[in-house]
Every structure is written in structure tokens, then in C-alpha cells.
Image 1 (cartoon, rainbow, N blue to C red):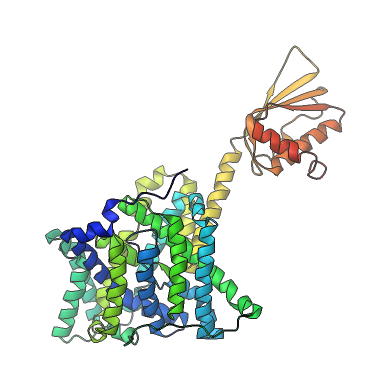
Image 2 (image 1 turned 90 degrees about the vertical axis):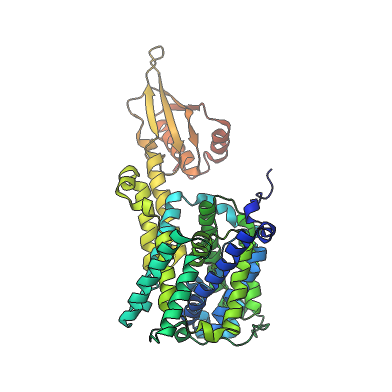
Length: 499
């Protein structure tokens, strides 16, 4: 029995504090993420139908709490569009108190799901679904920037292009300061110095001027309340865990390190409960901001996540006037870069597509299409996994065959050898592989090359036996391994007349 995964020393906060270089990277990464979080938190608040402060406070409390509680160092959790879409109807129909109660209950459900081992289900998500998940997120990150590039002055496009040039070219000069931060500072200075009139962060919504306060939702503790909020809370819990665990796995791959998915699951739940009690809208891991932190800025520890939340609060509460003048074009450039860096370009290269089995490409494409179409990661991943299961079942079904073995020493006996993995998809046609009329009176079915996985196969074998017996012939099944034999003995004859 193995214990918790060993933490890489490069992910240690103490190691970062002892290394000036690593500390600088973590601090600057947290600042860049904080700047990128502000407009998105405001936008997600609008989607959810609540005050912008609800999203901003949620991003602060989520980032700070998950830095201590989460299982994936350097991953950013905050208010997200996926969560906003799920719980928006609660705010619209029942008000703020029910909205916050939903967030708190969702956090509690996430903790319960973690306890029962929901993180272990990650092993059933194929690589092709993961690739589709990443590519869909990259597309959604890009398309979410389109409103900021629609019906705007031409200078916005010029600034966005300049921002992208800085982000791509500045690392060739030095990596001391993250290129996204340089881009934000340069574009802000240009717009202020030249008095260029372009949309700014301040145009997205009012920034708070006070700290978050304890908030206890005023809702009756009755079954009626539970009936109202439970469906939304459960959906939020599932979507939040799914997005967080998939993002954690992506960061594992990017950093070549391992993370504790179970801890991440209950950490997300605890963070959502904390967020709710401070009047926040809840959230989960954010792929865009995480990629800014890990890939664009090079962060590797919990310190960057913690500082992202702290810097966010400082920026919006004490430096709100300064943050408000940042041009949205600067943040758009950062997010477009994140979209480009997130997309798995290798997955759509012609050489890859020629080599990759059609089934794998189909799974990836279905995940992308459904996610982008619905803007719901849970739907996209769910459809991707379902398509993968169906295609896998079809492939495995073709590996099953029935071979007739002729035995000259006994004219009254016919031996059939069944080979392959027998389950509902592969065993359905098994009943048609025997010659019920032409075979002699003694039939032997050799199962030493097969394995029985489910009740469907047992029912099929019962059907084969019934058809032979109806013609006065005897069937003997031999060669089953212990597990198949146990399953067959337990179910045979108890499945409805062999059908």
C-alpha cells in the first residue's frame, strides 16, 4: 500500500524562500496572475448575475485558501465561467442568500466526493479526452476575448498586436521578468502617456473599496430550501472537481511532477465553503490563469498561488484607481498568448492525424466540439468519455471468435473453442456461432481462451445451452478461469430462461 505522493523539492515554499531567483519568479508570477484575474472575475460575476465584488472576493479567498489546502502546487483556483453558468439561475430566481447557500453546499459535497474517492475516476479519462479538453479550453479562452475586440477603436488592435509582440519576443532578451507583466506595464504607460482612449479594466465594473466580510446566508434550514439548492450545488460540485482535476493533470504533465488529486478534491470543497462564508461566488481551477502562472511565468510553488490572491486584494482595494486604467488590450494580448500556448498543436498536425487511429481523433474532436458548443466542460468531457467507451467496446468486440475443433475419435462430440474477452458488446453475436441442427449430440464449449465479464455473457451461454437442449443435445462448458466460473455459477439459470 502506497502513501501520499512525494512532493518534488522544486515545489517547496521553503525552497522558494531560500532561493532569490525562485522567489522572484513566484512573486512576479503571482502579480501577473492577479492582474489577469481582475477583468475575468468581474465578467464571471456579470454572468452569474451578482455584484462584481462577489467574483473578486471569490477569486481572492479561493486563491489564498487553495494555496494551503490544495493538492497541486502552482495551480490557480478562482471564480470561473463554468461555475458562474451553473449557479446563475439561483441568483436570478431566489436571491443572494440562496446563491451563497448553494456555494457552501457545493463545497460540502465536494469534500464528501473526495472522501468516497472520486479522484480515482480520473484513471478512466483517456488521453484523447484530455487532449480534447485542453484544445477546447484554448479555443474558449480565445473566443472569450472576441467581445473585447469587437466594436472598439483601431488603437485597441494596434495595442493588442504590440502586446503580443512583447510577450513573444521579450523572453529572447531576458527571463528575469515575466513577459506578460512587461506587456501590461508597457501598454498601460503608452495609453496613459499618449492619452489614448481605449476600454480599460475600470470599464468592466466597479472595484471594491473594502475587505470581504463574514456572510451567513439567511435561508430557512428546511427540506424545501435543500430541494431548491441541492441540484445546483451538486452540478457545481461535479463541474468544479472535474475541471480542477483535469487542470491538475495538465499541470502535472507540463511540470513533469505528480500531485495529490484526492487532496485537491477536498481542498476545492473546503475553499468553496470558505469562499461562500465570505460572500464569494465559489469557483474551481482556472486553466488560463494556471497556464499564465506555470507556463508563461515559470511558477512552481504554492507561494505564487497565495500571492496571486493577496495581490488581487491589494490591487482592487488599495490600488483600484491604478488598476482601473490598465487597457483591456493588454490583458487580451496575455489571454491570446495563453490560448496559443495551451492548444496542443501537435495533436492536429497532419503527420499526427495520419498516424493516429481514427477512433482516437474522433474522441478528441467530439470532446472539443461539445465543449465549445455548450461552453460546459462537464458535457464535453462526458461525451468524450462516452464516445471512447463505445469505440473501445466496438474494437474489443471484434477480438472475440468461436473456432470449431473437429475430433475424429468421437463422432458424437463437437468441440468449440471460444477466444476473447466476453462482455455485452462482444457476446451478443455468440449465440449465432453454433450449428444447432447439424452438430452431434454432445457439445463441448472450451472457454480456456476467453474470460466472462458480465451477466450478458452468462445469459448468452444460457441461451446457447437452451437452444441445444431444445434439440435433444447436451452441452458441457469447460476451461473457465476461476473468476469466470464463479460469475457463471452464480448467475447461470437465474437470468430469465437463458435470455
